[in-house]
Length: 96
Length: 96
Length: 96
Length: 96
View 1 (cartoon, rainbow over the protein chains, first blue to last red):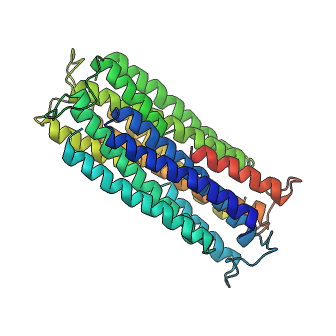
View 2 (view 1 turned 90 degrees about the horizontal axis):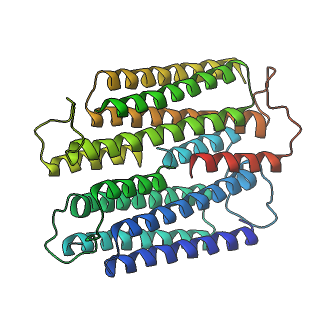
View 3 (view 1 turned 90 degrees about the vertical axis):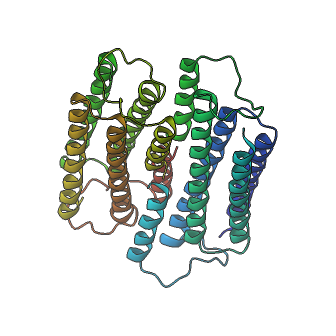
């Protein structure tokens, strides 16, 4: 994974982590259920975006083989067919 | 919100928080994208379950008016019609 | 189910049916994959909206017992607790 | 699009079309809301699978340039970067 990309992912993840902590505080403070629910939906959307970012990054660097100017963890001996099968499985996890 | 219910929500939330931290570590350690993606999908599923738990709790305690043996934050002067409209809006946030 | 509500559901469903036929034509005419995909996403969103409409209708008429000015199919001998369990299961089907 | 693939997509689509008709009949016959809801969820899942099938087909034939043994509609003058941007946008339509 390229450093800039990793940094962006970490920023997004920290934001999600903050959303989760916020939801915890809302539960502690007995906030109105619907407000908590909307925060859960927001954290879920942020995870969706993170997943899309990660998946297209994977397609770019591991499936298409671009952007590999640094050491990264895609260099597995898989055919593109196997890689696409894996992508298919992962998409199913998101779109069950 | 009833204490038992709040405790259960907090347990689920702590687990999700742990999943998010785990994803952060996987990014730091440059784990394989697809493994990270599957963890993101798992955290997303856990948030979905939390949302469903929260929503049915809301229907039970705030819309139907059950289980209100302790002080909780549902007692807003809303009609059931308004409450259902709110539920509709919240579901749209989850099922956009 | 109340007649007005049933009519609205049928209109939405006919629209979805038209979207599905349109996707079939796009496949036959070998349209660009991404355009077809966006139509699939649109049909999926329309099904989500139909589901939300149906679910809040169910909450209103069967769980809360409103709007039952005509014969309808909710009058099963279920407790509200059982009804909420059923709602929980249905939501899980949508938010897996 | 390759013929075998197109045929498979059409079979899936016909099945979804049948599910939609079935839901219409259930509404006409005033079936129990929750049963209808579960059918809506099933049609939604089938659309998700169709989308995943279509998307991985697109990645294979249009983004990676495989399987293009017949005329198909991917041959647009787009760079892989542009194609990935398009994929990103499409995924957002599914995972909003």
